[in-house]
Amino acid sequence: MTLTIICAALIFVIPGAYLIARGNSGVHTSSELQTSASKYASRTHDRSGVRLRLQELGKMSEGDYENFRIRQALYCTGSAVFSIFLFLFLGKGFALSIILSLLIAMTMYVYIDRELTNQVKKYRSSLESEFPAVIEMLTLAISAGETPLSAIMRISHSATGQLPKEFERVVTEVRNGTSLHEALDSMGRRIKSVLIRRFVDALVTATMRGAPLVEVLTRHASEARSVQRNRVLSAAGKAEISMMIPVVFLILPISILFALWPSLANLNLFAG
Image 1 (cartoon, helix red, strand yellow):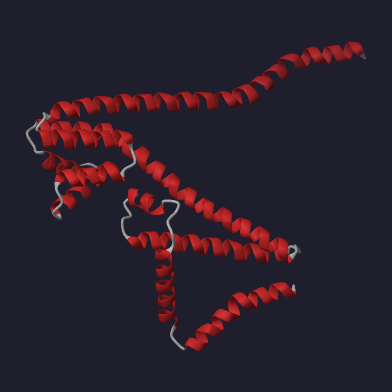
Image 2: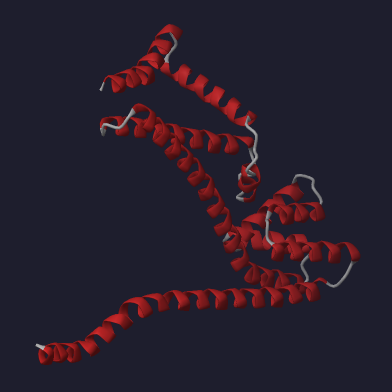
C-alpha cells in the first residue's frame, strides 16, 4: 500500500507541482506539452515503416505520423501505469508488477502497429476489388473519345470508393503542375499492389509511346477480372474448409454418439 501511495505521488503530485511552478494557464501548458511531444515524435526513427503505411492510407503530412506516435506512446504509458496499480492492488511484488506492466506496454505497442498494418491490408484489398470496375469505366470513357486526364477526372468525380480517391489525388497533382505521367507513377509507387502497379506502368508507357490505350485497358480489365475471380474462388475454398471444422469435430461425433447409444445401452444391460 505504501508503494502505491508513492507511485501515485510520483505520477500526480510532481506534474501538479511543475504546473504551479510554471505559473501559466492550463491551455498554454497543454499546448507546450503537445508541441514538445510533436517535436519528439518527429525526431523518432521510423524503423518499422510507419510513414510509408500512413502515406499509403492517404495521410501524407508529418502531423499524421506525429499523431500516430503520440497516440502509441499515450496508450503504452496509460496501460503500463494502470497495470502497475492493478498488480500492486492485487498484492503482487513491486518488481513483478514493473515487469508485467512493461510486457503489457510492449504488447500494446505491437497491437497498435499491427492495427495500422491491418488497415493497410484492408485498404489494398478494397482497392483491388474496385480495380476491375474502375478500369472498365476508364476504358469506356477513353473509347468514347475522352483524353486519359479527362477520363480520370470524370471517374474521380462520379465514382465512389478508394481507387477514385486515388484518381482524385492524381488530378490534384496535375492541377498543381505535375505531369500526368509523374502523377500516375506516384500513385503506382504509393499503392503497394502489383496489379495496380502493372496497370499504371502500361498506361504510362502507352501514353508516352502513342500506343492505342483502348487495347491496353481492355487487356488489363480482363486480367483484373480473372484475378478477382481467382481471389473469390480462393476465399470460397477457405470458407468451405472452415465450415468443415464444426461438421467434423462437433456434428459428426454427436451423430455417431446418438447412433451408437442404444447399442451401448443394450450391451451394458446384457452385461449387467
